[in-house]
Structure formats: C-alpha cells, structure tokens
Length: 412
Image 1 (tube, rainbow, N blue to C red):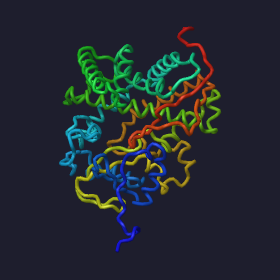
Image 2 (image 1 turned 60 degrees about the horizontal axis):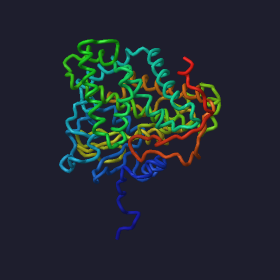
Image 3 (image 1 turned 30 degrees about the horizontal axis):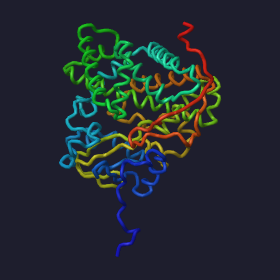
C-alpha cells in the first residue's frame, strides 16, 4: 500500500496566480519538494525541467554543448500543436540569434555587441532624458498618473528606436505596435507587421545612406549574414530591450515608493537609485524564467535524470534566491552583481546591451524623481497587481499622485 508520503512528487504547472502573487514562496516550495531541478509542465501538459539552483544554473549556462539552444533536439515536437501559445517563445527553426549555436552564434553576437558598444553614452543619456521629459510633460499637470502605462512602457523603445536610426516621429508608432504585440491586444498582429515593415524599411534606407547608428553599424559588420538575419536580430534586441527595461523601471519605483530605506531619493537625492535598481535584479528581477536549453545527451543535473532532448528552463529568479548562495542578502544586494538576471554564458544578454538598458532605466527613474519629487503611491502597496506570467515579472499598473507642475516644454 502506498501512503501519501511515498508518492512521487508531482510536476508543477508553470503558470497560474502564484507566479503573480508570491513566486518567491513558490520557488522555495519547489526547491524543498524537488531539489535544485524541478519537473514542470507547460501549457498543454508539456513536460520540462526548471533549474532552481544557482550552481546548477551556472552549470547549464556554462556548457552550451550539453545544454544547447538547438530547439530541433526537443523530444516533444510530435505533441506540440500549431497553435501552442508558447511557440513564439519556444519556436522551431527560428532565424534569430536566440536559436543559433556554435561559431555562428558567436559571430552574430559579436556583430550586435560591436554595434551597441559604439553607442555614445552621453548621447544615449541625452536621448533618454529628452524622451523622459517629453513623457512627463504629458502628465505632470494632472497630479496623478499610472507610471507603468503612461511612462515606463513608453520610454525604453523610444530611446532604442532613436539609437537604431529611426526618426523621432516614428517612435510613438513603434511603441504602440510593440506594446500591442507584447500584451496580446487586438492589434497584436498589426503591431508585429508594423514593426517588421518598419525595420526592413529602415535597413533598406541604411544600406543606401548609412549613418552613426546601430543599424548602420550592424550592416557594415554583417559579413555573410543576410539582411533577414540582421533584421531578426534587431527585432529581438528591440523586444528584449523594451519590456524588461520597462519592468526594471516599474519594479524599482515600486520598491522606492514602498520601502523607507529609499525615502531620501524620493526627496530629491539620487544616491539610492542605483542601489534600488541592483536590489530589484536580485529580489524582483523582470526576467524570471527563460526558455530554454535542450540536452544533447542523457545526463544528471541536481539529482534529476535529464533525458536527451528534454527542455530545460532557466529559473533566473529562483537561482538568485537560492539559500545556498544567499547567506548574506544585504551583502549581495549592496552592489554585488553576481545575479543571473541577464543570464550567463555565451547566450547571456550582451554586456553592451546591459549597459544600454541600465542607462535608460536609471535615467528614466532619475528624471521622474527630479520632476515629481513628492510622488507617492495612490493605492495601498498590497493592492499593486503583477502580470500573471511565469516569464516576465512586472506591474500591471503603478498609480501615483504628486503635486501638479508645469511642463518644461512651455518654458523652453
């Protein structure tokens, strides 16, 4: 006779409200029940593994031959329907850098890194300040706003579009298209089409009239990469740079508005902004889980037997909270950047891209606090809602109040 304690631990569904309300407690329970690597199921009862342990995640991301990005190896393709909701994230034969492996991947990553590394940091900050001021001009006279919907979700892509080489007039349309696509709104397909058409039009223009921008530099350094490949990588960079950066802004401002340690920054100082941003990457990282890796042969990881072709998901947030490395949380958040929030290994977010995201997020937060120094939450902190997603963690809204002030544009 089998008692309840003798039963095999059941896989955890990677979804549902707990990823919205208390993922930290959920990861803790999963670690206690399964160890450093937990069996999970995705939509449609599709099995996968979620790496919860810091050391195990380091192992996976450091071994791209055993844990490869080649999705063709997946042993579940025969049961994946054409309308599976996660296909945009876990696709087959996708042409972007996300699913390129080996030397080809390293060459593509070098093209991206080189183009972003050449972005002038002073110009980048200047663009971020200008667009941040323009957005605040639209709301500063109201005395209240939703920082997420009216600010954070509008800023990153405006800046990225500018350094790509798009005109400032194209920026708002690109932002609307991207947000429609990300949020699955009615215009999602139209948004995807608008982004693709705009990108190919920009590339065609830069092939004829190159300038000092990211797209021109990538085209100049592309070697034997096709225009299609460059376009795919540019669109991946836009999406990867926009939503997580917007969530970084929103999650940091939430922390600063709800934690007394950051009260000085809200009174006009800036010294705690970087500290709050770093703490968010440890404790409330925008990118929670990442798909994925596929095992090229049978192996063992964290006490679990992983079969060839199994899907392995990277639990970035869970690894950041691993008690085996979190012996001193204060020391880890106080300037320590050993978090997994940008990934690790050759498929991690390129370092120049991290610098661009940090510059946009930090400037956006600092400009808002400068312009609206008495900003305060308009609802109890407990009422702030998160998107119900196991992948990206961000607020659905951050309603605030402040003393109405005149727009800067009126005095320029």
